[in-house]
Image: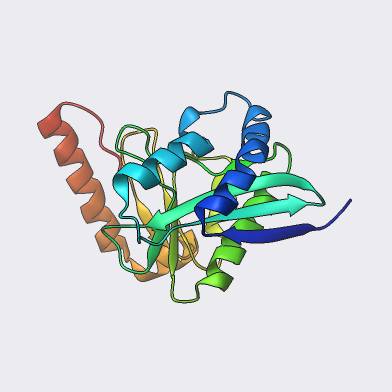
Length: 193
């Protein structure tokens, strides 16, 4: 098996050359989301970012085959953070990864983004379900952000979950649970903090 290589795209011309291969990879995914494709990303660039705004697409290759695509834009509410673009109704698009090698590819895509931009301390990736191997993989990256969705809640975790537990004491966890319970009572629904 050939080793993985990565490429960073930063121009519209490079993006246009990748388009067909990105679509091919997306078609290999079970239930591919239109929000994870090149048309969504190009529309996002056209309508949400200024012409001179920074963005990049990290691509993983195995030989001549594209096995991963991770489009990234600056996160408006967090300094030194990149995120997969999206809107509130999409919970951001997940990265497009070849089925069967998701963890390896995601690790390489994130590493390439961090190596290219050492000033970036976080990458926000959403659209991944709790309990999946990809969520576990995110917990073990040296830097990064995991945003949970599905329940409607978003939780940002810097570093590994064990590091977070070390920074936040038992009293803080109790207070978070109390706040979650109160919000649930006030709103008449579940609230996961």
